[in-house]
Every structure is written in structure tokens, then in C-alpha cells.
Image (cartoon, rainbow, N blue to C red; front, side):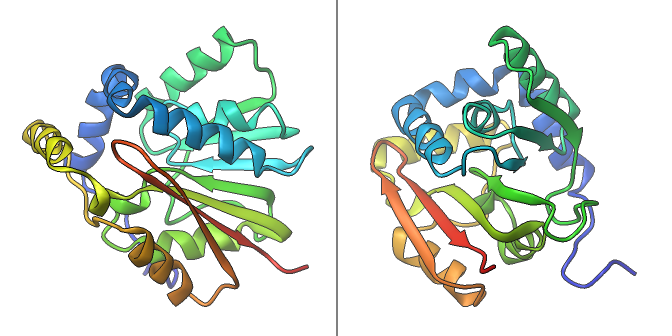
Length: 217
């Protein structure tokens, strides 16, 4: 049996989709460029200087690379190895030497309790059937006094034009499980009773809610 609160790896079809999408991921992200850039910058500002940081479901690593400017070390992780290869190339191109890379399942991390001063999981919770399981696992590896930073797309706030674009994405295999609004996203995080929750909204074509939880010492 799997440990309580952990789930099996996503099915092969889901993993294969992200593997195939890796080469085009950054191009697709340009459709929401202003929000994505602002969210990465704001996330980096929330990283304690000199922190040991973990970024889960990092995709091509944009949040990891932003965090590397403040953190002592960043472990950039994703389930998709092709995504990580793209992230590795970007880190090398930008001359970042404090970022390492590893394959991880966000719901079943091999790391010890309290291993990281800052933990990031950006733009992934809306894709998960049970986002609460992932948040609890991320919280487990957050060190006392550390921060869990959860930027998440607020699909429930998009306009009609972008809903059409989402349908196009769905046609090539992209699916999301939750269309959060700022209110429902906050409710999800607060329902876990992990501590005080802050949610900061970055407006734009697809708005982003940056959830923040600080772990008591």
C-alpha cells in the first residue's frame, strides 16, 4: 500500500502529454506572458535569502530560475524528464550554477520532513484531482519557519476569449480539474488547516493566485 495521503504516479497518457509538450511549453506560455512573468518575479521575492528551495512540477523551470536569484540552492523537479531537460538548458544559458534537477512526483516526495526553507509548486494544483494531497506533501518537506508558495492559475476568472483558447488546448490533450476563483482557492488552502493563508492575485488574461503559508517554528 502507498503511505497515507500519497497517490500513484499519473497515468501514462498524462505523463506522455507533458513529455510531448515540453518543446512547446514556453511558446504556449507566451499567451499569458505578463501574468507568468509577474508571478515568477513575485514568487522569487517571497523566497528567504539564502534558502534551500524546492520547486515541484516545475515544467521548464521558470519559477526555479527566478528563485535561484535569492536562494542558496534550488532543486528543480518535475515528473517529465523532457521538461527538466528544457529547464536545464535554460539554467545553463543564464549562467545559473545553484540549480540542480531531479525527477519527482509532487504527491510522493522522497525528501525528509522539513528539508527545505522554501517550497514552490506553481501552476499545477488546478491540474490535480486531489490538490490537497499535494499541498500536504509539500507542507511536510517545508522546514519549520519556512514558506510554502503556491502560485495557481485562476481558471474560474478567465474571459470568454480565453475560454476558447482553453478549448483548443483541450483538443491537443490538455485538461484541468479545477477552475479556481480567488475565493475557492483560498477556501481550499484554508480547509487543510495548516495555518494562516495569504492569497495575492495577479490580474491578467488568466489571473494567478499566489498562495502563501508560513510554517511555525
